[in-house]
Length: 85
Image (cartoon, rainbow, N blue to C red; front, top):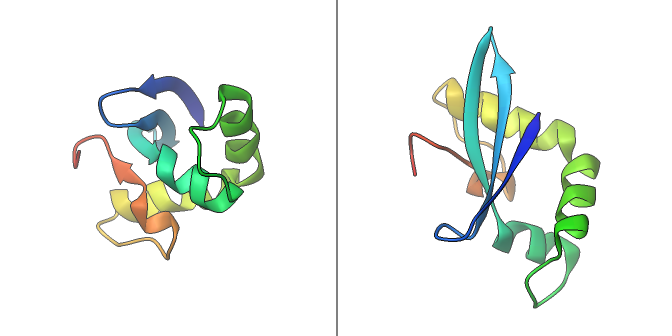
């Protein structure tokens, strides 16, 4: 999984992962990170990157599920594919 920075308009971090040889882009909402960190302020980049590292497998699984047409389990159901956004 790669992180491509923040999309301020969507208030989400742009990410991508390779699935079956295809680069699949998606978005991780800041609100999801805030909720799981238990904070009420916008997280810093370092906090988000640490959170993404900690939840790497779950975030990749969510993108895989979305790509296959399924819905990930909560709270990762808030992660979307770029084409859905």
